[in-house]
Figure 1: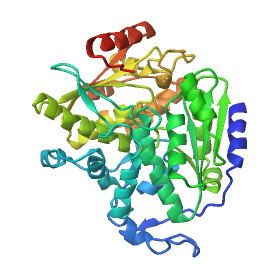
Figure 2 (figure 1 turned 30 degrees about the horizontal axis):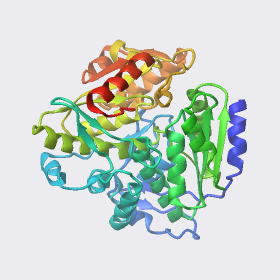
Figure 3 (figure 1 turned 180 degrees about the vertical axis):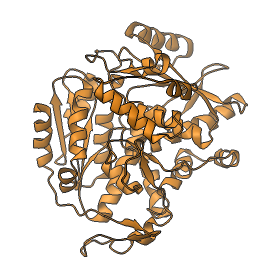
Figure 4 (figure 1 turned 45 degrees about the vertical axis):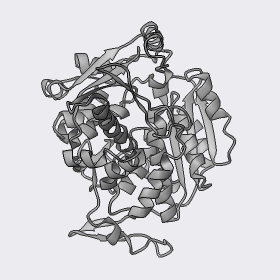
Length: 442
């Protein structure tokens, strides 16, 4: 309760009147419910017809959402996470055609099917190009061959030096684009153990729109000193940074409660941008397509590409799941965890249960006790059976944040692997990579 009150006080700085687009589907048409003062009134039907729709992993009764509504809400009304109603396929012909494109060019092709019908193509292309303009590496995500069987995908060349830049630059720009079009401000909220907070703050700063505000919450003493300074030294009127006592996951429930309070959220233009927001894993698909294309060149083969992903909230693994199911030749998807190992236990042992307390590790950014995106991974593991997903999470919540995966769930995760790595092994692996390849893999 104390945490929730602190966040509410910060959010009250951002109170705004918001007009919500309440276009509703009726007999294959769209009826605009915007007030007469809205600049986009009357264009909803044209804009939304034929656009991608998004549904809840838990299959609630609410109608499918547009991209705008899905990313603005974060959580679906039934408490589930949004996923595309259908994943648009990526063919071998597509991969061949994209091989010569730069990173932004690949991103435009990978992501356009999710935005078509809601955003003008020229505006979308400009938004995507701007999202990667701050990368320090000319090719945005270099892929370095380490030996004849392994390559390192360098996701840390964004403006805050972490892979979250790749998802949040796109997500925040999409939210700002939609808010500007509605003529309504947006207040973004974030809970972070290190990476997400600085990346979200930087994305808001790069957008440069005073009506897009952000509140970032981090657990005191549980983030790296560099990332604490990246957040607390940000001097801008549209930024609030709040520390709290506890572990990184302790703010998740209060923020979800705020998001699920539609009256409160709508009145303040409230939107969460942690990886439960569908914009994040959608954007992160791009580096899997890019990695596959570059590895095909490096290794001269078209065999499926196994990937190992440092895993906290599982957003990156959800993105890999999207890409694989769309047709990108990915093989085994491996979640690498630290001592906060719920993802390892779920995949390797069928035990999806929250630990009593967050453990402090050298890899703060993946200190997560309950990964949001396991719900998306489970949804696809169960062949999009939303009733089974809803039952699983009802059981999880009813049994004190614990659920044992059934046979169907474990069978559906057969293409996934997981490993639990302690601090000593992590540091030894970094040293070994430096000695063997002159690369700091951190």
